[in-house]
Length: 363
Image (tube, rainbow, N blue to C red; front, side):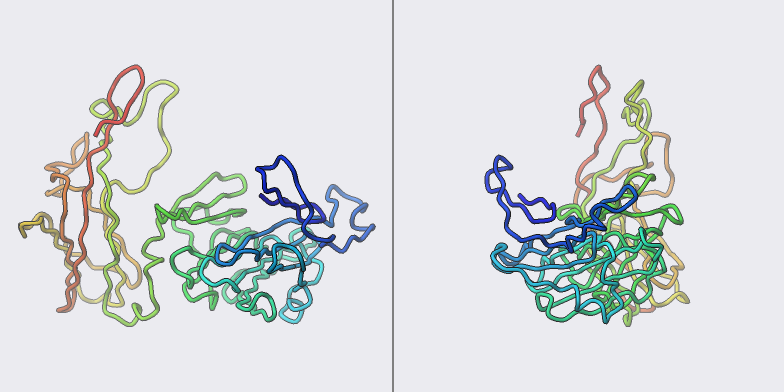
């Protein structure tokens, strides 16, 4: 375990005892320590231990200093000065250091000028343990940056949280795009991470709650896909939630009333296309090759999504999809302009709630 004061502290016994493994890593400026206002500076604000190489630890402080050790804290190298020529003000608050899970020498640093009336974005990347750095701010608005996260499956996929929302880079920081969808138009994002099993981006905001988005398609995305006519992404297995009020007790009664939105109920069929002129046909077959469902769509250029609710017909009843299919394996095929791609999709099970004094999952 690690925690930061003006020095870095480590515990090897679950917090029972602690030892200092660094000198004072701040400027130790008395004027900033005892300055006016409700913030006393000269403390460690962010730290990250490398998951790729033992002994590598990155540290950032609220008075702008950035450090790295490669020997468990026996010796430290300061990287603050290397960021100044790239536009990183020396004394601005280090909002996040992040150690790559893909390359041992790769790390990211963000600084925020929120407390100094400086709202420019400051995001930097190193691939050689801090000897050299690159500014990666292209496309970010003039909003303070609070957090950066590298995707655990795709090293070119980066996420930034700033005071406007979430931004995503598909090319290792070469440029950034706003990743809003149905999030509020401008909400400060103070933390985010990707769930390693669910492939979900979990976003923590200031005052607007927590948002979750499936980013499996972004994890699979490669730049060469943009040159293809279309690409069908892998399809994650999903259950069918019975959402009828009385039939499945989906909206629980009394103080257990559920009203929070959930992910789409069914298989999310995501595809990228560069062709909006030709219609796109989606076919679903069972394992015997029997047709189950067909759509003919006119997609937009870019990333598109179709949710199949496991119905063999387009109608829908009060309790769920009409004419639902059975759980099992299915083949999803996309056809456009004479080209065809197929991916397997699995309907895992039906989920509902047994009605009783204590609701339990019914499968």
